[in-house]
Length: 591
Image (tube, rainbow, N blue to C red):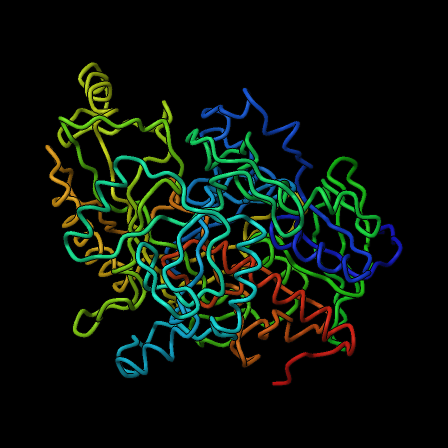
């Protein structure tokens, strides 16, 4: 029997970006809030300090900041006809496992989605006609436009101190920025990071070919910065240890730097780490949740935390599994295409591009950051004419040195042995002479890519594991081939001594090597409760006091990283709770 605790106004399930933003906004509005986090509590002073933080073996390979699959994992298969098997080691994607979530180990890339990304289906139909969309592609529009969300994008930018250069400022195109982006109400909070030599070479070649390169926007502050909460971030040190690790300079934005110092001092907020939520208490007849059940992982004691509002602010897989385990919503069936929970799972096409070697050019790859790169958006989304190409979507490109760490960064030319004396000699020779153009592509929803509960395997709490059914489809292969070949054209224009073959993904999706932590879908937003889990305010159709945050609400995955819209949506939803829901509890949208 769970120990019943005192009721609070709201409970957050997960204390990463969205849980921290939501908790901060609700406490400022006078509400009492409990923040539950399955992992341990981390602080920059104790856990992200020099010299220990610069440990590639500990953080990149032993995954110190990543969810432990021995406690909870998911099963995977390529097709509905196959039996799924558990992931025994986190590889392709790396969910966080502590206060701060995946923001503890993200690289910091900070994008806004394109206006056409927000209106994906209607934009394609208007430009190319309804027959352009394959029958098995289940893309849809977002439940709000870019223009509606722009003030919240702007607010999140200023919370994080994003470094970049605007390309569309209040409708006016600005040279040097991303001319394809939606109109911004203000310039980036900080100027771009310093560009590495390879980034400048890429910029020159791309411009000569008529393209529009721009500094990659990033939540690594290029200078000391005080954010909209009055908290100060340090300036980037270009150490090359951004992703998979914390930041010793507090230059990389995250809840620990941008919000949590204030939340920790807030009397109306209580943080409970090591608190693993197993299910929500669901009143189906009343169409609401009354609280959550969680286990203290240190003692094994089970608690019930009643709350007037429940916010699912965990990682994508956590949000989805809690709906399944709480029997909220109808599970998606790929054969009938009925049901909502688990549908439209998408990933991100990555590990693509081309590597170049320059005999007479020397780089310092150990000095850099993901934002010390030039990006290119000419082949992203619908920024180019897809007529007659036979696919939809696109890719973004980036070139620059970001993380030339001693274990993982070992570029060698084609034909080099994979081990032995010749390999060692080649790595030593080429370490200072290689550069790559990275290509990350969109992944549009397919009816057969989805999540449900596994009938065989269970987690440590005895619950069925989440099962992922996912594979690349023909549209994905065509996106990869077309955009990587475009990147290779720019690579040739950079005049390398040796150019490696274009890296294009072929065959089934491989869940073993790391690719990106950009999983989306499963609790998608929409206007129809028959095809979506949440409405435009991220409020559950099935429980009016349940709000679901994060990328699990995205209907498909553009080529961009999802953090920018994740933060913007948290502010958007928080405002709706404070100004609308509290005044009149109940559905904010009527189907």
